Image (cartoon, rainbow, N blue to C red):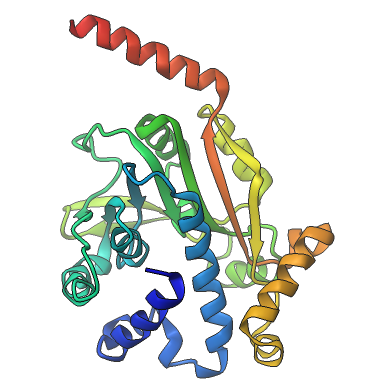
Length: 289
């Protein structure tokens, strides 16, 4: 299934699923439709373009309502989604809807906290963190867990907000000040969970944080998205606006660093950490025999 086909079916789903409207605002903010569609499709296209191995295992941390995982499952991939809060209860109804259009059995999901000691010790070829990294706290503990669950040649596919974006940074400061980490009590898990309070970071900061856990961002994979306001999307149209934005960030460092809203990137084990993991796995294999 193509992304365009998926998006059209997604809009039809939303017509009867008003519970999703507060998150997906296509029916409540018509003037920004092209603007929002571009953001949705660009990010989904980025993920789909990176996840290629058909026999791979993918972990979607913070899968939310499961939209990305459903798309991947419809295209034959196996994805396990981890989610918390109000998202979880909406997923079964969504599975029912999407089952009309293909096999979504490759998508499994659990209500779980990645910090739980009982987390399954699975190695994943891909780990998706979409709008999720800036919520994970303590961050270094989270990155260690992610690193430990990433296969030797696996890839972390990250979709994030740009922490250098001036407008978004001012907006978030007005909302939460410097209170970048908060707590909430999860009634289902019966425990208090730390949460990054929209604790967004720049690509440079993410690189520094990743390095502490033997991970490194592939600079050639970095993509910036969303700079034009909604009225320009309405003026130029969906495809032309995306084309202009993609040309702009590649030419203008100042614009991409401080005025583009989103950053997408791939992170992997560094060469030294990959060798360490391989040696460890070989040793464990020998000990088991």
